[in-house]
Length: 251
Image (cartoon, rainbow, N blue to C red; front, side, top):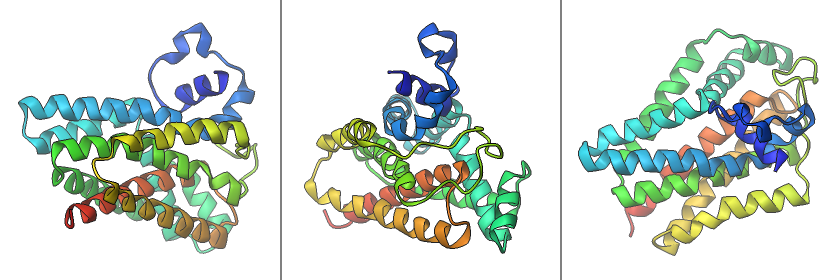
């Protein structure tokens, strides 16, 4: 429970820290990435609630924007910040040291701005063109599933920085059996909501993106950073929505 508490505090901006049970020691924050999928139930659930309720009184397109906004407010745009830093670093750096330096810079560059624009356009377009029930189910599945897939980065790469130079001032622990099993349950249980087994094909898309980014990170910086994790999640998530959209064409 302490690990899950730490994950909720780290990955959201909700005032969990006000509750005594969420005041956990620093050692548990080394495990937060391994319980990321659990947080996906909260963020995904809030997004779906916002989308569903919004669609009852507003046009579908507006409800999609409000759903995205709800997650941005809950997470403090943590993942989007990572996406922008990732593209700035990998787009503007020509070696490991320079890439890591750019990624740690608080200023956003051209690559970062473009990545956010394209991401938000794709997110809006893909979900806006789905039927409301498919969009809701897709979010409930994609959020925890893609966070789980992204959390497996520690099995393939080591941390590219030192603990002293990281934003968290700690290095994530490699996922072990117990957190793997717990996260897998939270990641795959929403799949029971899928309306047609044909849509399971969409899972191939985030898995492909995961290994593509693993290859890129290993080649460029021989490891990963927190920004890489945020970018990994958002790119895996958007690829899942892309897969669902393609499947809808053939169902």
